[in-house]
Image (cartoon, rainbow over all chains, first blue to last red; front, side, top):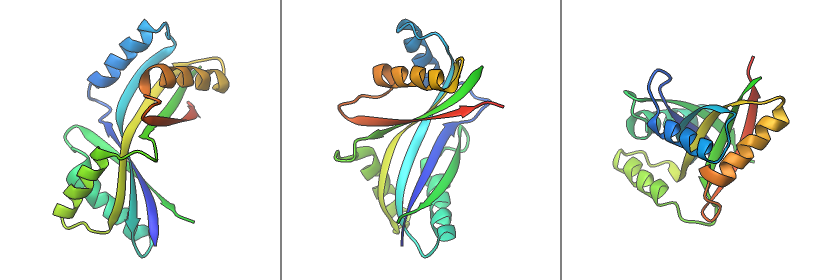
Length: 84
Length: 84
């Protein structure tokens, strides 16, 4: 069965996010002043062929830890969605 | 009140996603073969000061359409989370 797995890779909470700070400056230039903080990461959507949801999540976890996220600077969260 | 707003900016479904294709090749090199497709976009978390949820969503929508997403190549979806 084909599962859609969504992974969010975000900069660790304690680290400065220079990309977010730059976008915050850009919003101020557009006169949008009620945004107080921005953090920017990656949103990754995978189609995984697996026997069940746990197996799909396991494959996504291996992919995220080995390739998609850099654990020194980033953390990730995984959501599995069963395709209808 | 401070709202957490999550925006996902993804490449349009009809467009090729070269970054996703590259990562798919990387996974194959790691012997992870049951991933069939990958699309990679941005996950943006904003802290927005607003009177209510609709106002927070409206600010996020303006920010996304003016700065965060390129409508020629990307679409976005917005989720508002009320902070406790």
